[in-house]
Structure formats: C-alpha cells, structure tokens
Image (cartoon, rainbow, N blue to C red; front, side, top):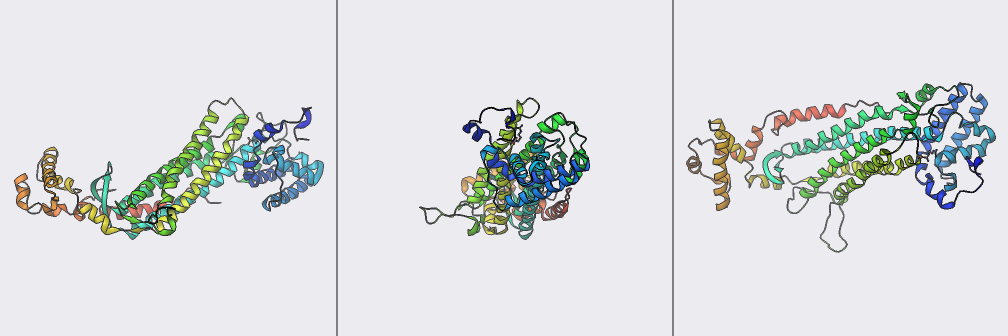
Length: 463
Ligand code: ARG
C-alpha cells in the first residue's frame, strides 16, 4: 500500500511508477532530507504538535535510517517514488504509528524545496572554495613566471607583447567575478521554504523560524506559494556555473593552442594528458578539451531548467522534479573541472624561449614605433600609416622591424631619431605599458597585490 494510496482502488501501472519515480537520482538528497526531518520533528514537539517522546523516537530512528542509507542498506524501489517516501516508510516500519506523525504540517512540496535549498547552499560553498583554489594556482604560476614575455593576441594574430603572467591573471579576475557571483547568490538560496505545506500554509501552530535557525538559514520565504514554486536559486547556480565553465572553456582553448607543436608555449605534464590508440607519438590535452566540451552539458542544464519553469502555473507541478538531475550533473561537472584544472596548471612547464621567439620575430612592436612618432608630434593616424608602410616593406623583404637601419627609419619619417630602434624590443614595449591594469612589470605587481587581497576576501562564512 502506497503512503498516498487511500483514495485509489487500482494499483499504479508499473510503467507509470517507473516514469514518475525520482528515487534513482533524488537519493542523493538523503542527508538533507533527514536533517530537514529532524529539525521539523523537533519543532513539532517544541510547538506541542507531537509529544516529546514521539519526537525522541522519531529522531533516534531518523539517525539510524541515515546510517542505514550511508551503509548502503536501504532497498530503493520505484514503488516508493522518492527519497521522502523511502525515509518516511522506513520510519513507520521502525517505530510504528508515531512515525506517521512526522509528516504533520508538511508536504513533500515544501520538503523537497527545503532539501534542494540545503543542497544548493552546500554546493555554492564547495564550488566557491574550488574556484578560490584555482585562482591561487593561477596566481602562483603567474608569480613564478613574472618576467616571461609572450605575444598578446587579437583575432588570434600577434598583436602586442605581454607578460605571460598578465595573460594568466586575466583568468584570475574572471574567476574572481565568478566567485563573487556565487557568493552573492548564496543569500537567495539561504531562504527556508518549510512550513509552506502543499502550497497554502498549514493549520498547525508551527514555528518556521525555529526550523530556519536550526538548519542555519538566514531567513524564511514570506509567501507559501512562492516557497513551493521557486527554483530561482537553482537556475542562478546553473547560470553561475555556466559562466564559470565559459571561462574555463576559454582558458582551455588557450591551453590547447599553447600546448600544440605550432605554438609550443607550454608543455602539459604527462599525468594530465592522454595518448592515442593508433598514433604512438600523440600526447593529447584531453582534460582541457573535455572541460571545453563539457560546457555544452552545463549550458544544457541551465536551458533545461529555464524551460521547465517558464510555462508553469503556480504552484507545485510534477515538472519541478526535473530540477534535480541537471543540477547534480552541473555540480559534478564543475567541481571535477575546477579540481583537475588546478592540478594541471600547477604542473605546467612554461617554454619561455619559444614565447619570446614568437614575439621577437614578429611585428608586435609596431604600435610602439607609431607611438614614438606621436610623441614627436605626428598625429596618430599619420604615424600609423608611416609604420604600416615600413611593415609592408619588411614583409616583402622578409625582414623584421628591428632589422631596419636608422637611415631606413629616417627615410620613412624625418621624426625618427637614433633612439627609435630601442623602442622595438619586446622588453621596451612591455615596460612602456605602465598604465594601471597594463602589462608593465610594475603594473602587474600592483595587480598581483590586488589579486592577493581579493583571494583572501570571502563574504561567506564557511560552515
Ligand atoms: N519527487 C518530488 C520532486 O522531486 C517530490 C515532491 C512531490 N510532490 C508531489 N506532490 N508529488 O519534485
């Protein structure tokens, strides 16, 4: 007999049972479910809705059930639908009719909302900590390679020399905003829905604040219909995760390019690459590729939940059960991606000579040559044209700008003096970009100080 079987005169069709059950995935919420039930039963007894003895036996049995589940002893079955029913059924099995009192003043609608809030809160903290860890690795690698010079790119064309550390720190700041977004979102997950009942509240004299306090929630939902319908906090987590994965995916693209034979800017450690079953020489950057690829499912999970919510009338609809698998999948995907990325970057070998050769053998200092003429009074547009012609000559004659003689420069513009050639080294280009947030070593050092203080700041208290 089902816990809700009273008004039914027929068995549920077995395919329907299988189709509507969520136990295969929501068993993951067992710990949250039991903690929530414990808080609820304490509150019921404190409010005189059940007796102290009943609460005591419920609490003891729930603790045992929690251990049974942890030991893998609970028999899960689609006939019992979801984790809430499994726990309640087992409770009644263990302590008899007193177990049937646990569900007083509660519905699975507010119960599942509570479990989901608790889960998301935990995972915001766990994800935020992993982001912070990856940031600290980026900072370490940047500091260890502070003076390494590489080409900076626009359109994937060599553009201007930059410090490798500057390039890495760009990702540090993306992750900083990701972390702040996670921190900010915590407040919205930190609302306690229990006590909404099925949708309209309850006839029992409950104390919702007591439950919120015990479970460590900052506040409660003010509206019972909102409380059982809301999945904003899950959407927000999925969005924050998708944006975070976008950043990791862009980093992956850089890593994959840099690790290619064509670039050869870095060498990934053997432990973080894989081989080919046919080509013996291959060493593939699979971790970076998969992180890039897994963005697809993370975005998919966000779009899926948006789509589930968009047309739903208030309040609970079974559609909402679709909120879980995508969320779990995103949590797992993001956490393993962050963990692997930190380990992979920690062991990366930086091929600084290759980077330097790539920038020194190119035209990345062209802007600086134009800027030289601007300082001498030429309008930037004219300076651009002068240097553009010089670049054209060099390309034709297979030379570099540094190979031009003082006279050749003078012929292009009388404003070029003997000090012009010194502007052409990558070192000089970098040293000249001292504007705040620029790539000069001094500016990068200021940036690193700011990064260190951002890293140690957390608006969240870790529980
Ligand atoms: N398994 C359900 C879910 O995840 C729990 C809530 C079910 N409520 C209901 N009235 N059928 O959404």
